[in-house]
Amino acid sequence: MGTDLDSGITLEELQLAARNHGMPLEGLRYDVTPVGMHYLLIHFDIPETDAATWTVEVAGKVRTPLSLSVGDLEERPAVTARITMECAGNGRARLTPRPISQPWLQEAVGTAEWTGTPLAPILEEASLDRDAVELVFTGADHGIQGDIEQDYERSLSVADAMRGEVLLAYAVNGRPLPPQHGAPVRLLVPGWYGMTSVKWLRRVTAVAEPFTGYQQWAYGVRQSEDDPGTPVTRIEPRALMVPPGFPDFMARTRTIDAGPVELIGRAWSGFGGIERVDVSDDGGASWSQASLGAVPESAFAWRSWSFAWDAREGDRQLVCRATDTTGRTQPIDQPWNFHGLANNLVQRVPVVVRRP
Ligand SMILES: Nc1nc2c(c(=O)[nH]1)N[C@H]1C(S)=C(S)[C@@H](COP(=O)(O)O)O[C@H]1N2
Ligand SMILES: [Mo]
Image 1: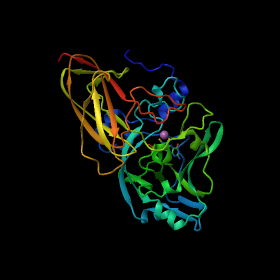
Image 2: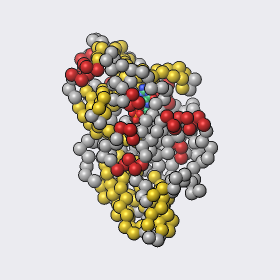
Image 3: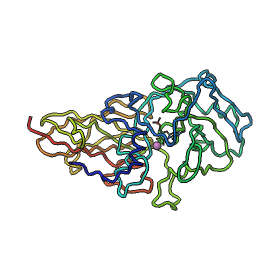
Image 4: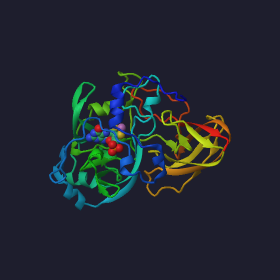
C-alpha cells in the first residue's frame, strides 16, 4: 500500500487525533491559514467561556494586582502580527518506538494574524516584586494528565514574558477568537512552540520560584522518564511542501505526469529567518536549492519557497530541508526522544511520475 507508517496506532491515539486536527498540507498555499484549517491542540476540553464577564487576573508577586476585562484589553494599544505556530509534538508519530500522545505526522502548523495587546506594559503596570522570577499563565481548562489533576499552566521567565512580541490576543484573522483557539483571550509567544501560548487565559501569577507544574515538565527533551531533560522553547526550522499531483485516497501517495512541475511550500524557524531551502527528488542523494519568496514582514511568519522540478518518469521521493540564519537545519535521520518533541525530521513525499 505504499505506506511505511507503523500500523499500531491505538484507539486512544485516534481519539486524540480526531479532536486535534492538523493543517492539510495543501493549506501551505495560503500566506495566512484560514482559521478552520489552522491546527488545533487541546489537552482537555474546550471550556465554556463568556467574553462579556471574562477577566484576566494579574496577581502574585506584584505591587498592584490587576483584573482586566476583554474591553480593558481592547482599549489598550493593539498589535496585529502574522505568526507561524507549531506544536512541539509535530512529527512524533513517525518516531520508532512511537511516543504515545497526540500522533502528529507533520501537519501541526498554521500561520494566523493575531491581534492583541502587548503583555510587557501590563506587567509594568502591575509592578512585579523584586523577587519575582517567572510568570505562570493559567488556562480555564482542567483535566488529568500523567495521573495529575491540573489546570493547563505554563510559565515564562520574567525576561521572556517582557519581550515586546508577547501578546494577550483576543482576535485571529480579524475576528474574535473562536472557542477552540482560546476565546476570549490567550497568550501568544511568537517563535516558541505552541504549548507556551496558553489559551482561555484566566490568570497571570508572578512567582518567586521557578514553576514546576506538569506541563512545564512534560515539554522537555529527555531520553527517559527520569532524565531531567532540556525544556522545549523555540521552534526548530522546518520546510514543508504542498504534495504535488493527486493523492490516493488511503495511502495518500501521489501521482503526477512527467514534465515541468512547480513545487511550492513554506519554511520557518523560531530562531531567526530562513536562509535556504534545499530540495531532492531522489530521497536525499542529491540536492538543489529552492527559490525563496520575499522576506516576510513579520519575523515570526513562515517564508514561501518554490522549486522548478523536472519530473522524470519513475518512482521519485521528494525531500525538502530548511536552514535558518543561525545555521540550524533539519536532520535527515531523526534522533529519538521520550515525548517526541522538537522533532524536525525532513518531509519525504513519494511520487509516481507517469508518462503523460
Ligand atoms: N489552556 C490551554 N492552552 C493551550 C493548550 C491547552 O491544551 N490548554 N494547548 C497548547 C498547545 S500544546 C499548543 S500546540 C497550542 C495550540 O494552539 P491552537 O490550538 O490555537 O493551534 O495551544 C497551547 N495552549
Ligand atoms: Mo502542542
